[in-house]
Each structure stands twice: as structure tokens, then as C-alpha cells.
Image (tube, rainbow, N blue to C red; front, side, top):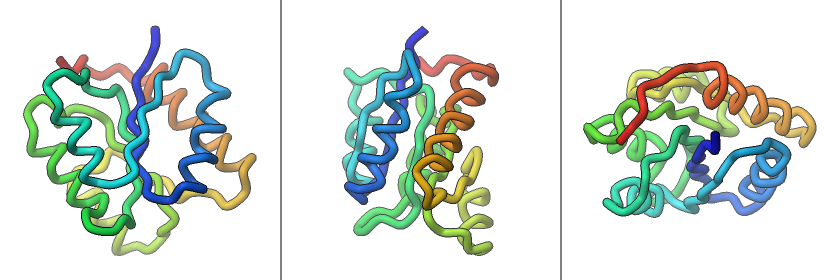
Length: 137
């Protein structure tokens, strides 16, 4: 069963690394949003099916990950989607804020590609294979 992942990250290098890592996992359809606003445009488009998982960067200009997370959690159609914060920040305040805003998980991006790939594979294996969530319609 193909799973749809929405990757939200403004850093082109991080997007490229994530797409490379995600390409090693079969049966995944990945949509990339390069900003918080682009992510909301994708998520709120009536013609777009809701993703099975959102990988969301925290530190983005104009609309940060918390604002996107708030919008997702406020939307009846989207609020059940797992949102994994995938960010470079390991600051305790950021971690706490993300959980307070409804993050499902918080992962600090490893700097090493192999560790980054392994982290993404673990995230995907759990959220798209092992975990059972209600289908978002």
C-alpha cells in the first residue's frame, strides 16, 4: 500500500538529503513543500488527498513549523495526521513548544547522512507500517 508523505522544509540541501533517503523506502509518495504557506496550500486543497504523515521543519521564515502545526491541528480533516517535527534544533524550549502545539514526535536531524537516512527509515517504518491510525478522508 502506497503511503503519502508531506515533507515541509525550506532548506534545499535538507530536502535533497531527505528525498535521497526516502527514495530508498519503497511504496512512498513524497510531496515537498518549501515553506509553511506552501504546505498549508497543499493540505487545504480540496482536490488533494490528505497525507499519511507530515515531516515538518520547525525553523522556517515567514511561517514556521509551529504555525503550520497549529493550522493542521485546528482543521477537522487534518488533525489526526501524525506530524513529526524534523528539525536541527535540539533546544528544550523548541521541543516543549512543539509538543504543546500538538506534534506527534520530535526528531533532531542527524548531521551524518547515514544516520539521517536511518532516522527517516525508522520514522517511516513506525508511522506508515507499524502504527495504526484512522484514515483521514
